[in-house]
Image (cartoon, rainbow, N blue to C red; front, side):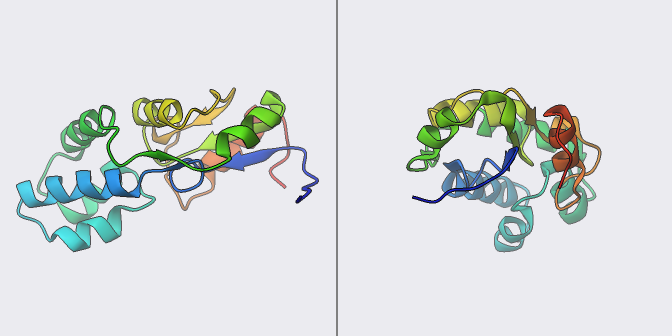
Length: 154
């Protein structure tokens, strides 16, 4: 058994607590094909970034907010390609709720949908793309989560 001595833990969601690569890539592939964009470039660039940032960078001729809303609607109702990660729920249920948080590049409606699919407890602190001005890799989301847990970021 591994023992970690920490006052708090910050988790990413996709790829850490739930496996969603298949769903994410499928959604971006459909979106890119429908807009005549290089599918592989879009899929590669989109991972770990907020949708609005990806769209603004790869398709500046489109209205990023409108496109991101369409993507969100699709992802918030698509369970195919989203799978629980073994033992993630067991780990989270074993932790004091006031000592862990989820920080994700996804928007809240998609994150809460995937948390439910994964059978995970609802975190007391959930930081999503909706809650920050700067997406990952900027540390803003992690710093905010630590502050809301009442813990120093270290």
